[in-house]
Image (cartoon, rainbow, N blue to C red; front, side, top):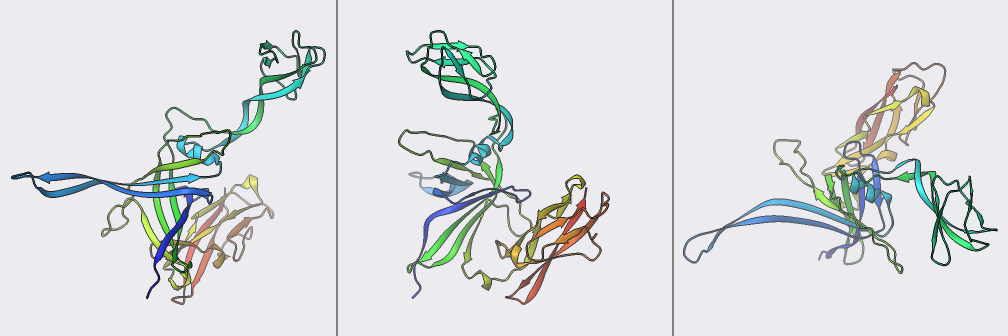
Length: 345
């Protein structure tokens, strides 16, 4: 008799760029994760006592919600449609300073007047000279000061018109049998996941803030004439994945560019194995060899996917070649091959 199976605990959430496959975030500390499938209906009734004749179901929707226990800047960035940028920005600086003869000295350079909060509850706004400032009647007390400084920091601009981001979202959860053994990994893959733009950051004196990310799957066009458009693909990946044949491999990206001014430079190739409806990362199981006509300035790590363009001699712009990527499928005893172009720009 087969053991019963159970979908346990919470799913990992993986978000990637829907066009390039570049990673955006990996959520491994989720508190909850939910996959909701819904439809609306129209009842067709007629005749004596208005019996139900038919129910027409329409407007299918797929909703995902993930709640994370850790604070992640990416969650806010996806909701406002802009990930963090790093640069010189104006921020507010606060500190406690002990005055000496009415004079205080700030740790950093103020860009504005200093708001001085006195112990008696009054506030003085004073203009500093460099790092020093004078407080009328301050004596030798300690005061709290607030002023503006310029520093390098990460920042997200919450724009008025920028829509929330669209990402490639994958949820991965464990399916265990009644003996506690993992028998499958349930993967819910949504190629086009539209973030809702709803974000709440709640802070409590006796708690830790949680973040949530939710949104809806967008329709993806079918790639053939037999299957229709779809929102998501739900796959049960067997733990003994080696028993599933790899039909083909996809090496990403299709082209690696090496700016001449940045040489020497190394970049990575990621290889996915297509096993039915499931994509499995096979990078370290593949071999990477430069094509015979490739320039000697390119080199490939045999089983790493790391491609390096060195600065040996003079390398003209436009120098190019190709990387041959090969995977040996042990199930059907055959090789799977793909290519990645490399070029100096």
